[in-house]
Length: 89
Image (cartoon, rainbow, N blue to C red; front, top):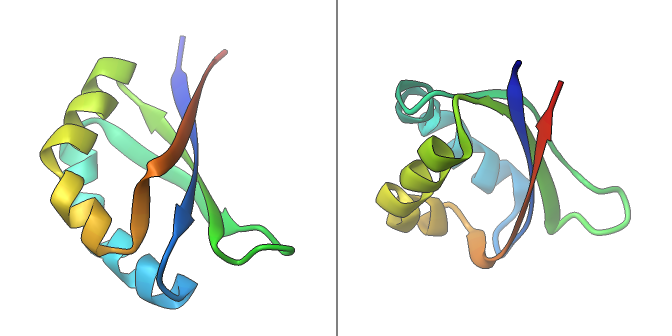
């Protein structure tokens, strides 16, 4: 069974700037067992973003967020706005 995380959050920077930081963090995320499948923003609010990722476990994702929190926040991701929905198939 595969596990996925749908992550919704706000950003306080331009989407393009956030996206560049997001791309640069992908090697570290992959090492943590997180593989991004999609990322984007909503049409009606460009500060609201989503990431859909395949994850090895919720615990591994939580550990990644804890360890990379400063880097994630510097990308413009407003950490306290983050809502995660875990999905399985």
